[in-house]
Image (cartoon, rainbow, N blue to C red; front, side, top):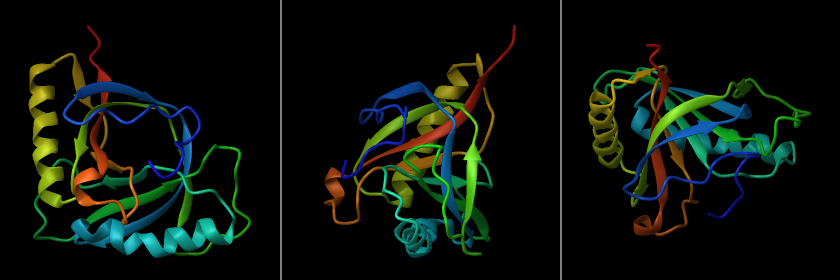
Length: 176
């Protein structure tokens, strides 16, 4: 990883592993993209980078992409994705904020996560999202509590085969 994780964030899930993880509250700057969600992270990069540069906020890893239209990977119609650069800690507040982005505080969450090594391709996302859905089908003690997200840990200059990412689905325990 080329940058540090936000305060109290867990380490990335190892490639191929599936695990349940707890995330603390965190603050992020977010760009909302409507259209082809496969392009969301590329479209969002410049406005997000301008924000952290202008406000002298340290770059962290990962970049977070939330797919707000749920578990569907169908991309023939316009969908919405939110792409976020995560602040190093929740005590930071920007001096300058443009209409392109918003600053959001996210509550703690529990997720089921699968680690990935390789390209940040849409097919890689789809394949690993399906594996998580299969895992959830076998673990009825959990229910889905939010839209899926992808965590991207490496810079665009990292060779495709070396890139690390995760696909995650927020979950909650089922009360007996």
